[in-house]
Length: 350
Image (cartoon, rainbow, N blue to C red; front, top):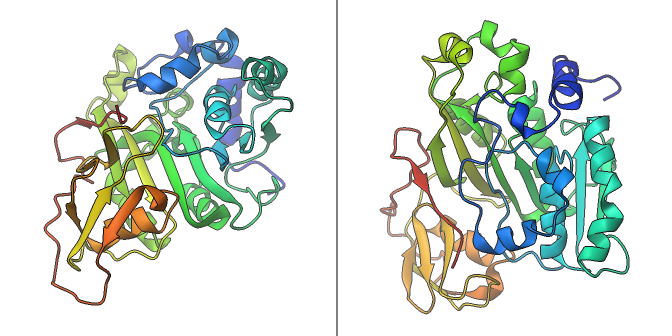
């Protein structure tokens, strides 16, 4: 992609020059909407203050079981999440941050040696690349090379979201995971608001309508994504409320796997048992907002859930009883992949 996509120049201006710290944000959209899990807060204490001060995110999109993995952070900014991930993947893992804003990358690069020494590594396991999340190929990210893609309140800023998600599934390994937090809307954003530079910069103008997101994911072959948490965003700005107050905005954290899943939860009589062993999850593991696996307790699961547990990096931590040779019809699985459900906030394993 030789030229930036239309609309990205104003985003670069907003995040590179207008905002000096997260205190300059006009709404609560681009800030943490859920409590960070305790094990991540411990790591965050070791992250440099300048990196944290210039952080603009809306969630805590960092899953478990990452040691030795290769992680890609889309829109990595000053590198806050990259440095947390650096600690989690360990010296055998690698973290790649990609961002289009010179000022943000400069801050991230400035503190690379600081975090390498802080975490006790002999060489850095993080690298930052200037590039566009719509064009990961030009940024040098190869097909099927990434274990986990994360993003924190960035994809809404892209004017070509389908292109972003297409690239994500291209670079993920089979069984790899997308785990991201972003702003969604309960209706489609009117064009005049979608073009407003402040609303876009505040992560509202580009918010995806949840049903359009579902349709796009299905088009790209991701037929069963899972909701981790969802909370309504309060705007706290009179001008923005007057312009967009009729729209309900939500901060949501979503996970999706690169697997050949079915578009409905089907019953094959399978049972999953969490064996334990996932770091920071001694007693239970949260797959999504309606699947919490207690250690040692058998739990009936649909075929898709079974595949998410046995066809991914979580396989070593689960026993799956049964296969997909005999079908029993639809599985009674209460999903809340809808903004019409009650607000949810599933915390990390304790």
